[in-house]
Length: 249
Ligand code: 6GU
Image (cartoon, rainbow, N blue to C red):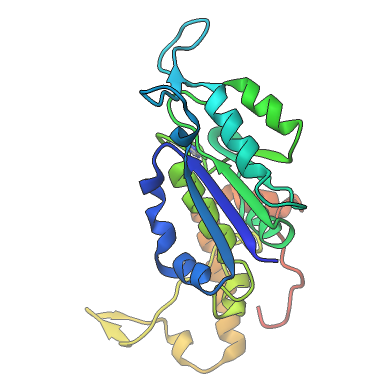
């Protein structure tokens, strides 16, 4: 079944990149169906108000529940016999990982991204819809963006590129950082010498066994330098693991 993605936002223009490049082509090829909605469609006052001051005081504004309620009621019931997963991007969510992207690409057929702005969405919206649909609050990482739009774009790209047929070379997808708990090895192409910098000799040697060993060492070294947390998880037998340790590495 074609993956369907709906995005609800007060800034539909933010999602313009979904028309481009890999996702744009996947849409034209019918591999994914994307709908972007303006949350203000579901307001009824002349100023199309979506936010208000927080009860209890504090900084900033909170998104009012009514537009979200009407928007999600309508969008989530738009396809008879299908149930979406609602995804609310936010810095307070569970980490969005490559494993979750893989799970979504293989197990979900409909994602509805609810992009909040300001200090967030009234908590009752989460309660209401988590009681009716599968719902995930997901974060890209430990930093704060202005809203969920960029995160919805990032998550959409991470999932859609894993849908069969979207990326030409399927093998290139499994040999990537975060697929097996190690970062990727450094890559080189022509020319063999550039500004006096040589391509590592082993890569020009034609010794496939040695090349595989060298690449594996580079992956471990690079991961230790940049992401020691990944090696810790690997040692603990946690997180992504290589399916087998073959002779070629
Ligand atoms: Cl998913 N949303 C927002 N607003 N900020 C973030 C984030 C998401 N992930 C990291 N920072």
